[in-house]
Amino acid sequence: MEKVLLLLGLVVMAYNVLYGFRLKRAIPGGVMGERGGQMLALIAFFALAYLAVLVLTWSEPSSLLLLLLSLILLLGAVFVYLVLRLVDAIVASL
Image 1 (cartoon, helix red, strand yellow):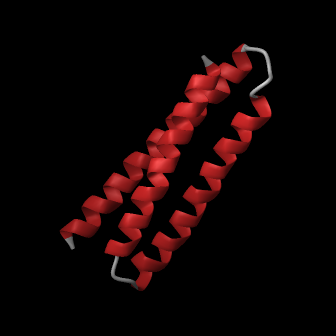
Image 2: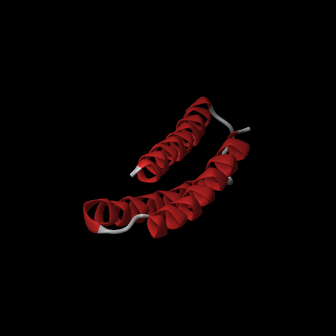
Image 3: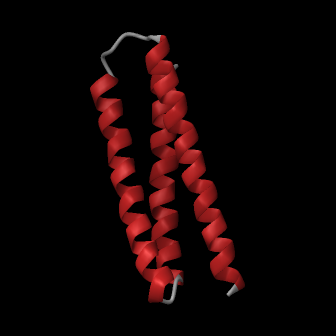
């Protein structure tokens, strides 16, 4: 179960990276463009971190701690997606 949650979180984060690149192209520049680049770099870093956690815990036996970690990471990926949608809506309204 933990591996499925981690994989799902990784897939959502990979989508977030692609969504972030699309959003970065839509932002004209200035403060939003600069912060958008920083946000995209952090999203990419966290996507790599999700992959690292998945690789490092692949052979670990199931445990409550690993289940909680997987759930927190998945919900973090969903949170990033929601923030990207919010930024997209803000940029579209400008």
